[in-house]
Length: 196
Image (tube, rainbow, N blue to C red):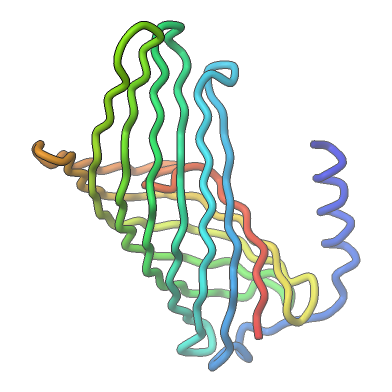
């Protein structure tokens, strides 16, 4: 892990091409975003992958659409495994502010739509599945560093979210979160972006 951070730091120092957010209007981008996290000594695992395609509708404003998958596995109970798999469709909008020529910060608003399934697998018993649908609203700040004119690396995290999840045949439950790692795609997310 230390080598990964040192490699990223070296790339940041070596990035010599300057980029100005003022020149983005009309350009498109492709972003690959992913996250992975564990809790309780690795007994709970969460991951997500979200490719995004978007365009700059103004010099510092972009809109896009992400389609991806998130999953989790909980093995904290020795007699039971809980799994969750969710397909996400996420329209989003971003506003960028330049800190330096290569370094930008952004605020993102997104409206994720979720289609998923919870699975309960007891060690001695019958597996059960519950399908659900959901939607929400999320606000995420982030940072974006351009390594060259076309490539950047970024990191973001949820800060506020509201969601409504309805299991098949059940009642919807609403949830509001304010704080780090809020939302359907909770956790710190890292991405690599290509602007063209």
